[in-house]
Image (cartoon, rainbow, N blue to C red):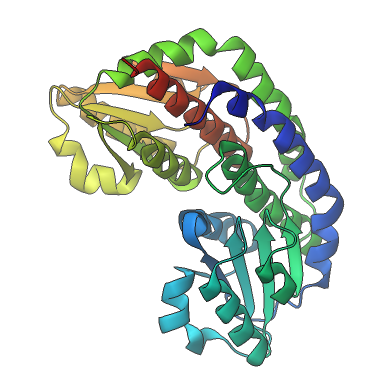
Length: 337
């Protein structure tokens, strides 16, 4: 079971990860032969869902088409996409997945380039990769520090690729500052928001059902939080992407249901989140939220919420992931007899 010491160690692990990424990722990006085709991204094991999140920053920032599959799916159905100069990015915390190693060999045979984003620099996958983006966090793949650092490193990699490959724009400086301040923000919320997080955790621990809704950069944090909370007996928890929630789930949210919405004032999906929260309240269900204080519409429409500092959408989603790892831990503590 995750404990408070593990949560408290996350800001330090994140600081080290981002400092090393700042020093190394740009140089590695320059060495990659990016080619003309799509960037193929595959996640292994616990990182399959994280790989799905990778498409958003690469498509939004770089304007590249991205193909994302779990490694087993790509190995069986996507090999025809591998051409001379194809780029395949493997996301694997442990780097020991046999299917990932086989896919890396297939990429090499086709004349492509394999990139590895991993927390295991000595793993078999790293030995097969042409270029490596290292993450620095102690623990196994289930450890919250590894989860948060892998997420932050993935987003920072996309940002470094933007800075290396595209013409500079002023808003990049704001985003860079937000990344630089992210470990400090995690430390601040852990110090200042303990009573609030524990109050929300006590509420969640009493629930029979919970839906967690997030879109865009916030979809992966929603998925990971639901995954953590499923270990709690008696709580049925699901994660739903916000547009799917509006189209298929919102009308089922009735009195007695509780929905936790994830967003931020700088999220491009916040209007959809606001619509989902409003529909949920209109149907008589309770609305919980995790957002920042500038997201006034969601704050006003929530029965209970956690407010965090406002950041650019990418680092804000990592802050949200940290908060949810912490919240899930507190829920499990609160549910103890």
